[in-house]
Image (tube, rainbow, N blue to C red):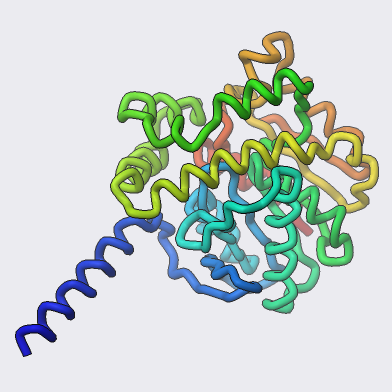
Length: 305
């Protein structure tokens, strides 16, 4: 009996540790098996479905405020991409296959949930994934909402090599508290409770057993974004599309490599999509859906049918 109690306490301690390593979604999560990958996702609300795809280093909780608002009228499915938010990590992909793989996983989730007339909403890297999904499986995507999307800004061979050299798993592993705070602050125009929530979650994640896999996934994502640009295929996207950028985005464009480019310059590239509407959100940074949630939702609701 004593041995059984010891084992039980050990298992309980593991489950507590695991739960502390998951983000604070604010909603219950579900799991689904797609091939050999277990995907965690949020599924809340009823109505026309919206698939939400987070960005590099993020998770479904980056859509917390969006889900709170849109789930009143829409079914919001926020996916945790492989390696994020409890979903199985996949680190053996070639760089040019990373984002198409994410898009394929997203497509299979749409099919398994039997979703129709889907709006796909992607932030940053998730926006690039959303565009690839629309190109790969156009019949599955009714319309697109691209939130500060990656993939519009491109990098030459020298610039890409520099970014890959810089963005290694070890680089992310060794970030101290000051660096973490600075990096998350760069995503916001102003401080708020959401910024503080993400900082605390990042502090907690650093203590988790899966932290090394998380860092590998970020490095792989950087390689994937660079290896599969979508700029030359924008004219092939036939879905009605909304692109929203924060006017104060400090991450896109890359200020170090492209100092003369502005956020507006990058947003204008999106005009190559035939049926596109572009909105610029004042006093908002890269994570504009958490930085200015009410204003962001207003823009989205005006776009949605």
